[in-house]
Amino acid sequence: MTTAPQERVGVWLIGARGSVATTTVAGHAALAAGLHPFTGLVTAGPEFAEAALPSLDHLVFGGHDTAPTPLPKRAEQLAEAGVLPPGLPVAVADALIRAEAEIRPGGPQSDDPRDDQELIAAFAADITTFQRRNDLARTVVVHLASTEPVPADDAPRAPASSLYATAAIEAGCSYVNFTPASGMHTPGLAERAARAGLPHAGRDGKTGQTLLRAVLAPMFAQRALNVRAWSGSNLLGGGDGATLADPQAAAAKNAGKARALADNLGETPEGTTHIDHVPALGDWKTAWDHIAFDGFLGTRMVLQTIWQGCDSALAAPLVLDLARLVARAHASGISGPVPGLGFFFKDPDTPPPGLAEQYRELLALAERLAGRS
Ligand SMILES: NC(=O)c1ccc[n+]([C@@H]2O[C@H](COP(=O)([O-])OP(=O)(O)OC[C@H]3O[C@@H](n4cnc5c(N)ncnc54)[C@H](O)[C@@H]3O)[C@@H](O)[C@H]2O)c1
Image (cartoon, rainbow, N blue to C red; front, side, top):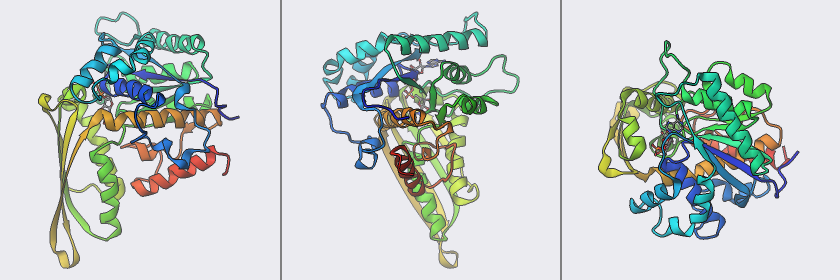
């Protein structure tokens, strides 16, 4: 079974009014209208031309959020901050209004009387209604909500990300976890998704410091250089920066960054990674890495890197790539973790860990989706 070009595909964003989600919806509308080139969109390349991915103008957006500020207002705020080009919120106003009309209240709010099962049922009903109303062939649920703390063993209720992942399964949807949250990693859920014939991909988008680490760490390993210590520091404003000021939320994020190093180097090097909230930086992140290593005869050397990126602009095209690839994987009968998508994640469900090998695996997935392997 293939995704016919005329099939409409839903993209249901959890955290639909956040910076990444707003940039995704506004950016999608800009690309679909031909207002901007496809810079940053991996699946726009010729390697994917025959993979029968849903075309951009057949994607329909909706989602859940717990915050009230409507998408058009969020887009204006992002344009004022320089994340979106000036004038873009006006140019794509219709698309923002359409997506805003498809956003439903998320949860749980602190005073929410509903138990976990009631919340799952409500979320699944919202997604199912969205699918019917828009006559969608299938929907991909993409988790883009604020980073959750690592769940405590004695927590009174399941993490919100697990409730949304369960709702995605109950609504018959594929699932992408772009954050470090539990999501489909909740015990039993991945097996349930696979039994239901649903593909999923995660977790935590690889957009900056870890992207660089996935290139540099294999280089040290392949050149037989001995990494003695790898230390990192991040300065970040924006909503994500505010969330990551909580050490519990930062711990979830840093665990994925450390795993990327351990998987590539064969052991965890000395050194820690910090995330500091600097509100004045807004959506711009500065990530500094200091890598102390030994060469021939134990000669000591250091590599330092500084990455200055606009987080939402780096993340949004990957959200579109993942939605297209996972929707197509679903249509072609792939279930469980989708091999080849580790290229996009800090803490991938499927090996290998280095970026070059991950890209080869992604191209192998494109061949499979094109029906050639
Ligand atoms: N930007 C990047 O480069 C990047 C890379 C990897 C991962 N991420 C992850 O993507 C996520 C979104 O980042 P952002 O910059 O858009 O953050 P943001 O703070 O701007 O947006 C998060 C949104 O989630 C909403 N939310 C919080 N709890 C919710 C719930 N229970 N249900 C529904 N919505 C809820 C918030 O109201 C907010 O609108 C974060 O978890 C971040 O760690 C971002």
